Structures are given as C-alpha cells and as structure tokens.
Amino acid sequence: MLVSFASEGAVLKPNPLAPEKSEIAKAMIQERSVSEVSPMPAGLLNSLKAEQILDLLAWFETMK
Image 1 (cartoon, rainbow, N blue to C red):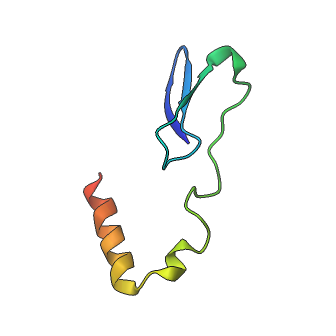
Image 2 (image 1 turned 120 degrees about the vertical axis):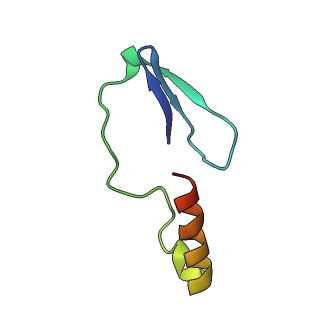
Image 3 (image 1 turned 30 degrees about the vertical axis):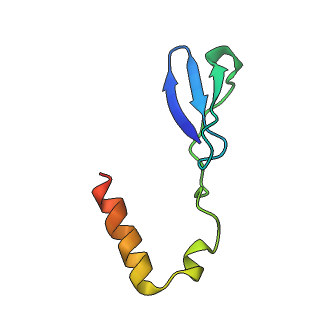
C-alpha cells in the first residue's frame, strides 16, 4: 500500500496491520498504476452481519 509519494521517492507499507514501511527511491520506480483490486480480502464482508456492515460504512464516512 502506498503511504506517500514525493519527488525523492515513495513510502510503501506492505502490510497495513504492521508498522514496518519501505522507502523506494524514485529512480527505482519504473511505473505507477492504480490497482483494480481492493486491498480488502475477498469475502471479508461475508462473515459480517448487516448491522456490522452498516457500522463499518458509517465509520468510513467519518474518515472523510
């Protein structure tokens, strides 16, 4: 997951649940593109009840 991108390079966080970050020099980056796949694991919502999903969506709205 991209944390930040600046003139000197990028900071990546491979695991959003871990504190470790990786810095990549801009010269090492050949291409950037937006992922067509969500970082959320497939089927994650299937384990939640409707009320839990609505709570999650409400929380996301507060992050704007």
